[in-house]
Image 1 (tube, rainbow, N blue to C red):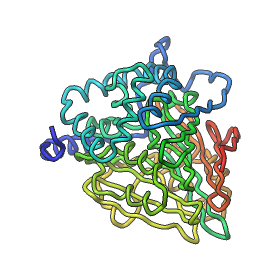
Image 2: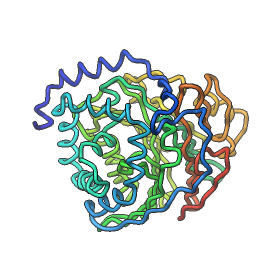
Image 3: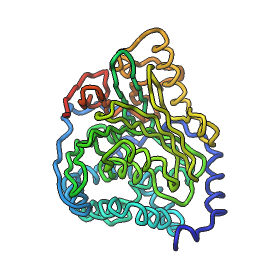
Length: 393
């Protein structure tokens, strides 16, 4: 079924259904003691093991297959740890496959076939059916259609003043990913090479990364109330990482075919510029170049053209936004200190997040890009724990 022949009324009905649910920053019932793969905030963490580095090269299918093979056990682990979430989301997607899977795949194939080739290769390399990888790469759109809470809460700071051009970003997600992330160094045929953080089973469309053309990118989840036929956000984000210039990246990001809401932080080492880009379905977008200020972004729209887009209200997003804005107003400019803060307006939603009770979201890494110097530093796990690692330049 072609995307443009899908019933938009059907999509609208599903989207309106999602607006009735208040998403509370990854709050869910804790697994029962003894459940296989259960991850709870009460568990004693295993000793920290540094994120492994995976190096791949080749065309899209080769890249995907190599990534899938290298992360196979991690994909299996994450799916097992989040078994109920994964099985429920997969059953939901397959119940109306044409609408909930095929529509997005067709749009992605039409616009960015190389990204879909990478996903297919990843499935082969991981030894899993393609549908499993599609669920992992479509889960923002599927979760919105299902009105299911998300863990994708991230906090971002831009510092462009006094000669500094810095992008600092806390990557937040489910506790299940804490020890399962990898650092990916990829050399795609005919495209800029890149280094990124990577989640098992997902293309690198939603993680902090930097390419050899000097493009820097991080993303923030936005809980929109509407999903439209179009290109999934992870696919758009992955395509951005292949851009050779900031202008090209901005053009990809603000295209008219996005299926769901999200936010991109885009910078250029070559041009010494940093942008905040907000994207919504239906061709709605806005962008702002950061100049002469410290700028905060969490998980809600703040720019003029997108601020009116229907979105979920997140206590987590508002809490972190207020804490960071207040600290900056008081004169604090140390981004590591700011993003290591455990202060919150609504507990446990601080910039540096740790699981508490039934809230399983946590900060899984902090990325620090010095755009003026062209460097990428990663803090593995919570930044308050100080596991600093130089990724490269």
